[in-house]
Image (cartoon, rainbow, N blue to C red):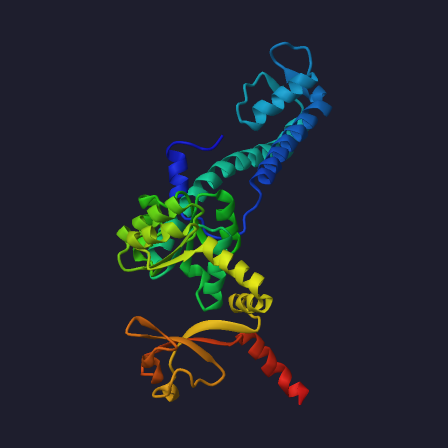
Length: 358
């Protein structure tokens, strides 16, 4: 059974920051073992020295049950006084052994309570600090296979992990995001309150890769209402829902089923074409596709005349122009070029090995 009520709402409202955590069950077992150990030692002290204790009620000596009883009321500082040490060495043992055990028990008991309260307070402070510093970040709704691939592409392009926050309804996905060094929220990606907690109204980019098209449409609509200026890219499984996503406010829509199906079809028609398309989508292998600013020495030259690169398009004034557009015949200052070039990873490796080859 899951946690319900206000406690669950409060726990889901706080950001879960990546950190190393101990297994809570192992910690609980460790503390139980310590408590039992304290009781066993205390009982053994009384039982093996039982002749030095007096039962002031029954006057029938100290049994094992009496020793356990005395250890319990002593450790918990209850101390009814019905069983007392009467010899000097028994009182000395109580002072030197039993009293430290009693203090250790109280520290363990109080420490556990204080740790719970401190953890809740610390998490609230971390949540407030995180939200206060989060600006112009990326919000990733859905941390499945597609969401992780999108994130890896962003990170390889220079994005910082501390500027990414994940929202997912699957606790396993939230744990995976924390393991990957990301802040994450557990909850519904369409929840207006939760998206506000993720500072979505202040985000620069929003990526929506949830598992259902209806959820993607509602999440896009909610995100656009909360943030009219962010760049929103969403994935959709069925092509007929792409227009609904655009109407809901998505700037870019990727139809996952059609895209995968087209790649499979191309690979079937031409294995070499499939290899090349897979190469373009794979980081560090052969070719890569990227967007960059036109260099000063490229201004005035045609887009087809680039050193070591092939231009696919030019973005000018926010409008994408294909390489065959007449406007691409002369590059201008401020143009963004979409090019295919050798992978930087491969190029760097070649530069490293070239001196040895010579």
